Length: 474
Image 1 (cartoon, one colour):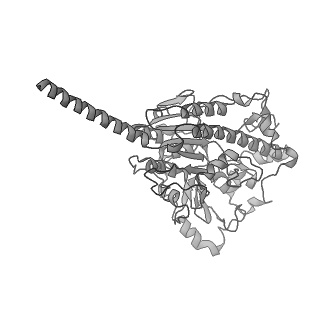
Image 2: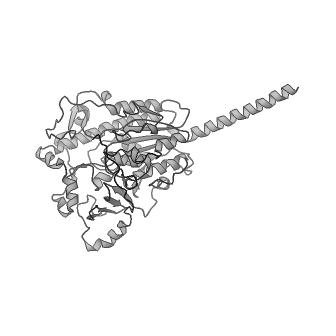
Image 3: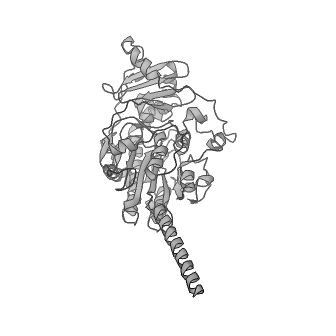
């Protein structure tokens, strides 16, 4: 009899432990997954933001329709490495010293906990493929798995038989169709692997990062994407003749450094360049569509947060400037959209879809936003602010301004109306986006706006740490 009682008691204990284990597992699974999509060098040339009338981004636009689109979002730095390091660590460049591309970010922040590390430490499987960190500085410690390799984050792309197709002689500043099919492109392979992971059942909730490299230079994609944008119908960006006349000397140097615009105009390549950029955007959009379709066909559709971001904007001749590396609107503005499934605890009133927030947002806000959405322990050292209040109510007004930094002591401040730029030598620019969305008229020397400059100056960082050590191998 005693043995029967003992067995019964033991069975109850085992049963309770099993139930507890099931509840724990279920609690983990019920925490939302995260699909984290990064696109390289994509400015506001998407349909949802109207940056260029000929841009073709149906898949990104459909994602915007199921998201809150932060239409006034800006990068922490207008370059790949400092922008991505800031987003992934939550630490602003003026606090880390990572201001430029050739500065390895991990030695500058050896103890920092990245977004995927924080998720892994709290019960998630963190994995990814493609370009999430700047290509030269991957971070194996961030991931449980990375494909194709922890140290080789990006697949190789096919290239034309001869480089410098456009004849400008400027390295990877080039654009041309490639003869290989889409399936040979690196971003296609990244999207394929991500889609495969989405189709699987997982023991843990996942943080899955998909890094799309295009439209980063060189703009080499298959011919069919170029064919979507005939040269004879190509629309160039809207520019103002003599736009540099009211800029300080340091800004003129930023605009013309490298001689890209002069080379493009002299080589009669402006339309071809815009065509190559639009073609690369269309190709990238197609890969985003493949990933979203895989999610929607998977068992994870209803419990996955989607974040889509790009690391900074891009100039294509505006202010006689190309690439990024500047503090104007075209370099700092970035598409940022967040889609939240119904029923997660951080959104008790349900998800808001297809709306825009016009309040200033920073890519630094992504980390604290994901922490709140997924119920992770907060991190007080983060530079950004959670966007969950604006996900709940996109009409919410704030008195906030956000900061973009381009090298030590060079900052742009952006609120709902104004952009104020101050360079390390003290020179300034001020633009009124209500009247001047293209930033053609610098108001900084107009005494009528002195009080605006004083108010915007209060947002300038008070700490500007020295530059982190540069890569000695470059």
